[in-house]
Length: 184
DNA sequence: AGCTAGATCTACT
DNA sequence: GTAGATCTAGCTA
Image (cartoon, rainbow, N blue to C red; front, side, top):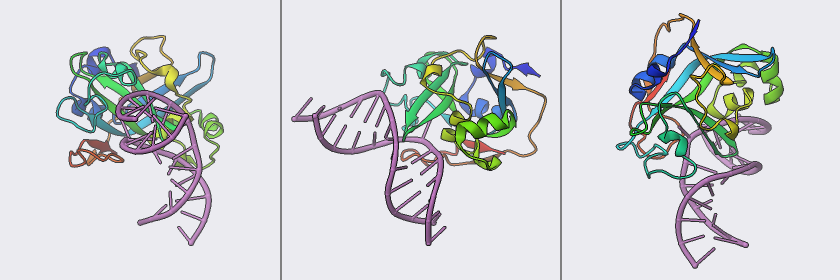
């Protein structure tokens, strides 16, 4: 069980999206409480050629975190929910990986409280659901998750996925043909 | 100040 | 599977 290093995130988002599957996302509250879940669904967003990316129309106030280096978070709100991206590559390449779904591991009772839901499969099975379950909001936009003090970390625990599926991305209106979604 | 788009969720059928 | 609720940033006037 070791945290993924900064160099891991500074690679191609398509590779990072695939390799993140099966790793463990940990939400640390500073005290004993901890929530974690295994990443089971991701999507890659590219720069330049990808009209679906929030970076496509250039730098603005809301997407500034996308223009940081790999290993930072990009949190954006929409439809009354928050979505969480991990930024990939470097400042000159505003790419990222959207975390779409987790399999709950630790802190399931706390997740249920955050979500007002009791069914396990409803806790983290969507980008807006998992941010709510882990109590992630705009406060976390732009933080560096490779720092040991970060309240959000991603660990590799040696788990290797059996089979990785790939398909078109979900919930977008542009560039829907690119198969940049990965899931277990 | 008003309008729209947007990487969604829930409850219901 | 579908409809309706939901919030915010960014744009236009």
